[in-house]
Amino acid sequence: MVKTHLSRLAALLLGSLALAAGINALRESPLPLIRPSRTELALRSGITPIHLDTAALFAKDPRFLFLDARHPSVFRRAHIPGSTNFFDMEFAERIKAFRDSVPLDRPLVVYCDGAECRSSEILAQALAKEGYTYVYLFFGGWIEWVAANQPVEKAEKPAAKPDSTKRDSARKDSSP
Amino acid sequence: MIWFLHLRLLVGSLLVVWNFDKAMLLVPPGGAPLAGQGGVIAGFCLGVVLILEAARHTPPDRTRILFLARFFLGLLFVGASLDKIVNASPFSDTVLNYSILPSPTVNLFALWLPVLELVCGLLLLSGIWSREAGWLVAGMLLMFLVAVVQGVARGIDTHCGCFTQEGRGSAISAVTILRDVVFISVAGVAVWLDRDLPTWKFWKTRASTAAPG
Image 1 (cartoon, each protein chain N blue to C red):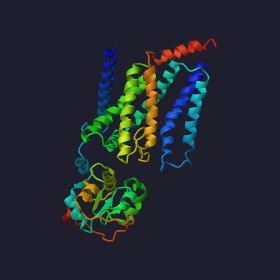
Image 2: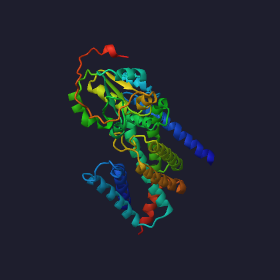
Image 3: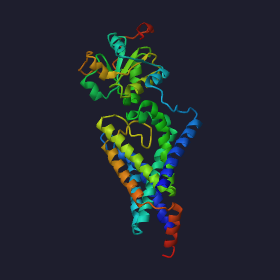
């Protein structure tokens, strides 16, 4: 009796796995069975992943706009100096105003909490889709920034401020 | 009029399952405002009323409770699986957001789980291999409970991804945990009462007992 139950369970598990593989193969764009790494996915979306040292370098350059994709209440507590809060869940409501104030060729550095949060990836991908050419993704995010004793800013900054340092191209000089 | 009783049960269950997730979204803070969601609430309440009203007409017995539990879980799992199968890529992102599985394994899991849900849901509805399907359903619900509890405990900001991959408004919360506990209880009842009784035989028995009356 137990053997029957176990064999049925195994049949269900393996059968559904085979069925899932079959359904996936029939998709227009099948999902890869092994998920590509975040870096690979970012590169495919036209986003450049950067590490802490590059992020620290960019932070000193006013041409780069740092975007903090965390929740506004967390952003208010502290953030990377000069960064602007752009919570990824508010993308739809805020993108128009953002586009009006930030030119498409301005380099953007997007971050959130760190390796485990995905807001920055989602925001970076959405911005790349909007036409922003130079989108950098700082995977290490806030946690890595603080752990490395980098400077932080605690005062609240108005969201999506108008761009005062409008640039033309010439971003290659600052690429990592 | 046994067919009418079953029709009420069917319509009631469909309404409850269809509106359950949306109705739950109204509860947590920051959820959609109650105003403008009248259709969801009305649909959910009508479903509950139809089920209760249908259940009132015949005395409860183990077989009927088993049938109801299977029926509810079957519809729930079939309903929950379809959107995930169609939107496999967003569901894979949702699974990743829970931050439990290693990233390379997420896609395989996101492809497999909805199909397993669909198969188990259909088996529960038909009553074939329903005991095994019930175990698997209970296992999946327990696994989801662990995922949500750790997500809430770690403050992970993700949506449930249970019935739809659209939007990111239905963040996991204590309500999601409570809802899952209810589902696990129903699955427990289904497993506990289970016996080899395909659904068509149940309907046949019901029809023959109801006919003289």
